[in-house]
Every structure is written in structure tokens, then in C-alpha cells.
Amino acid sequence: MLKEKVLKAINSQIEKELFSSQLYLAMASWAEANGMPGTSNFLYNHAEEERIHMLKFVHYVNDRGSHATVPSCNKPENNYESVKSLFVQIMEHEEMITESINNLVAVCMEERDFTTQNFLQWYVTEQIEEESLFRSVLDKLNLLGNEKSGMYLFDADVEKLITPPSVI
Ligand code: FEO
Image 1 (cartoon, helix red, strand yellow):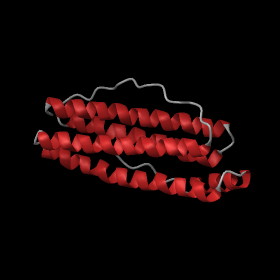
Image 2: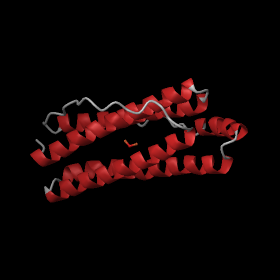
Image 3: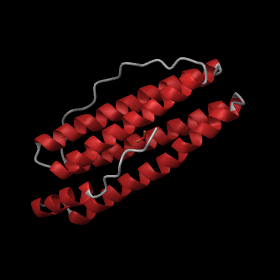
Image 4: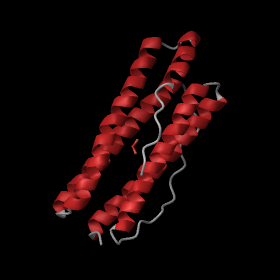
């Protein structure tokens, strides 16, 4: 069984991963409706990736003899000013998630739960990759500028960054 503080912190992280998935789903739908098929595919894929992050926590908690509770989550923003503002928001969101994972590691250290701390290393590494991925997307956007031709190239290019969702 997980200690109460660790369980509470993981259940809160489950909610954040669920929100990430819903947020990227809303962004994917916006991009699809606004004629950006590559961007929307990239975001639909990333919404799946976040769902896997959530499920990985759910299975871990239950495997440890505790109970992972499935939360409701806040409604994500469904409208965006531009593709750039959307990706700036993702970058800020991922930085918040990194901070949250780090706090979770700190709770495990305080509670001397070294097994969960070890389990969390996957997320620590994943967050380095996620931040690096979205930083590279923002770099592309900055290089291509806001003209229509730049957006067309960006949309084709960002789709190439799709990777198969990680395995639970
Ligand atoms: Fe689950 Fe994008 O971090």
C-alpha cells in the first residue's frame, strides 16, 4: 500500500495527465477545424501519449495495493488565436507538469518511498524529452514566421515529429 501523502500526490498527478490529454485533444480539434492537418495529427497523437502517462500511474497505484481514483477534469480551452499561441501554451503547460513531477519526487523522498521515487524516474526523463520536443516546435515556428507559406511548411514538418505512443 502507498502512504497517504504519496497516494494523494499521485492521484493529483493523474488529474493533471488527464487534463493534458483533454487539452491536446481540444487543440487537435481546433487545428483540424482550421485547416492544419499535420498539426492536428501531431496533437491527436500527443493526446494519446498523455492518456498513456495517466494510465501508467493508474496501473502503478493499483499494482501497489492502493486505489487510483479517476477524476473529472476542467474543460480545456477550445479556441486559439494562432498556432504559435497554442504551442506557447503547450510549452508553459509542460513546464508546469515538469514542476509537478519534481514535487512528486520530493514527496516520495520525504516519505522515504524509494520504490515510487524510482518509478517516477521514467516521468523525469519523459519531461526532458517533452520540453525539448516542444521547444524544437517553437523554434520551427519562429524560423518560418507567420506568413501562409511558412504555416504550410510548418504543418507538413510538424507531422514528421510524430512518434508511436510509448508502451505502458
Ligand atoms: Fe504527461 Fe506532456 O507530460
